[in-house]
Image (cartoon, rainbow, N blue to C red; front, side):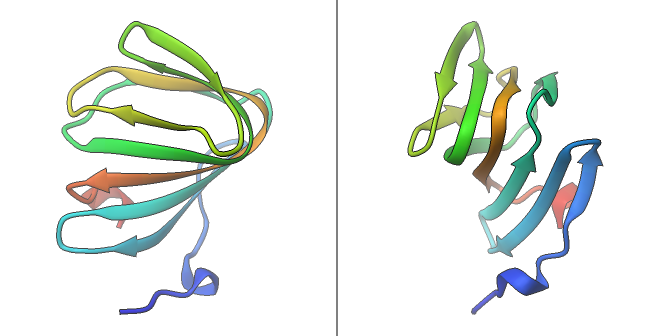
Length: 106
């Protein structure tokens, strides 16, 4: 199946943070997040595995007790049930894949 970017409606998660669910399959989902500088995503955990790719900008990602500053081309992995969060240091676009798909993001 083909999904077009123009059909992915933006959802404001919080001020300065937009989510677009790009494609959903049976066992995975890809979402794009557009984040303004200064946005903080508080530490949280969920039952989904999460793999992320920083397409542009700069973010400090914390997974468990490790924290890294990531830029374009860098990736991260948050295992199921592990606390993770982010601080946006420079306006960014991050693409995340979730397994299984998040029902709240459909």
